[in-house]
Image (cartoon, rainbow, N blue to C red; front, side, top):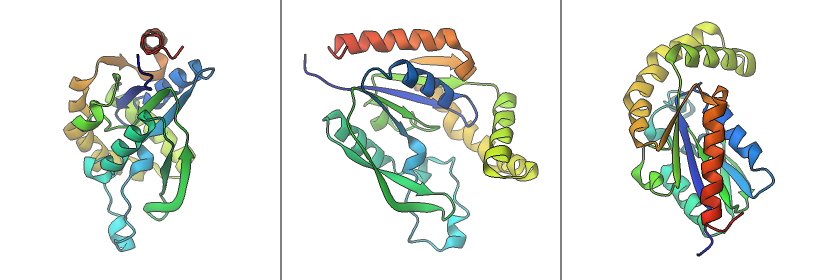
Length: 211
């Protein structure tokens, strides 16, 4: 059987715990050849727009992402060729001039809020996970993260959640749950589900003669 990397997609709303799930899987396979591709790195370049227009960017909308580039990069990694992953400058609201060289690996975890939204991207995945967490937990986690880690005020976080995050979640993110092979409730706290995922990934790797 021809050697080919395993691609695992981990989706879910902001604050759902998808990053915790991704890290748990990543840490389990650290002895093997594994990498993570975060969708957040693939926000579109906006250098052609005035700064005032960039400030209005809706980061929870599918059109905010350069999905074509993400697909191209995954296809390149599937050929065991390296890529130059973009870096996004949140202070300037556009893509940085810097890139990160990513070497190919046997396991590729793709993580992000909308990675199941594009059929072309879904078709590259061997396994699609959706982390499903109640809205009250997601907003609490987002509040804590944005206030502690990003210096935001509570009012600004709540305003953004009510006017942008929640409607975008309901319109674009939640519907992608139907494309998932497996739905994981409560994110990184669901150790049973994560253990099942690890076992399934090991099986796929064995089938592809990678372990």
